[in-house]
Length: 152
Length: 152
DNA sequence: GTTGAAAACAATGTTGG
DNA sequence: CCAACATTGTTTTCAAC
Image (cartoon, rainbow over all chains, first blue to last red):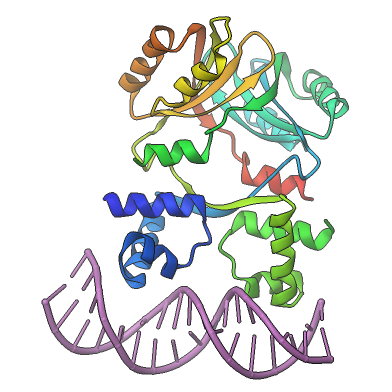
């Protein structure tokens, strides 16, 4: 990982479909050497994949929220986790330290769907306590820009 | 947005560098028609970009956390937001409803860096109250799989 | 939507620094 | 570690339908 690799990462984060030829021009290497560096970044796991980024609002799910949950104690956390993630609006979740066991990220069509989801959790998924926070706004410079900044 | 577009999205989410030829084979259209659909998905904002996904741990930042913060009341929230996001370890933040004003996502090299960040917030960035939650584990099926599930 | 041809591109091997 | 070049097959793009 030298400065050229960091530039490669920056460019591929901003456009994951750049051709090796164009990418090579930006890092002033030959396409061959550039492709080889990209291959190694993938092999070593620095690049974990190339993905299209989908706008959830454009897909009809403009309402984003975090749902912090605490689960009923017991040996069946794996099943409860799977059940929570199987809810259609749930995008993902992480196990965290502190007062809550998990923070789930959800994207709903409207508040009715969010309401249904929130009602289902204690009823069907072993949730004994929860707290929902609607996302009002994403701060400018979140995401791509921040990772780019990490790369100098 | 028909079933073919949804298949295109699913495939490009799992591999953003698929050639139009391969993508076309999977949706049983010609490469030309497939490329045109992808172009329209981008133009209408459904696909907001193609990006390389980098593994933060492989970049030397294995420690992820959420930091919930409440800011000092006042007219200068925009500057405070910018100051928070300028911290190197801060990946992004969202303005949320509820007890906390913002939830920041951070990726640190180690606990020392997290400690420094947490100390700096009340000192330099107008944070009057905060709560840090370490990410212990990401639930299997978060992220890509969930968006794919939304597409049926 | 399709087809087909031209242009651009990627992958590989070789030579050499 | 890299460049430069040639080769071969693939991919994209574009006109015409």
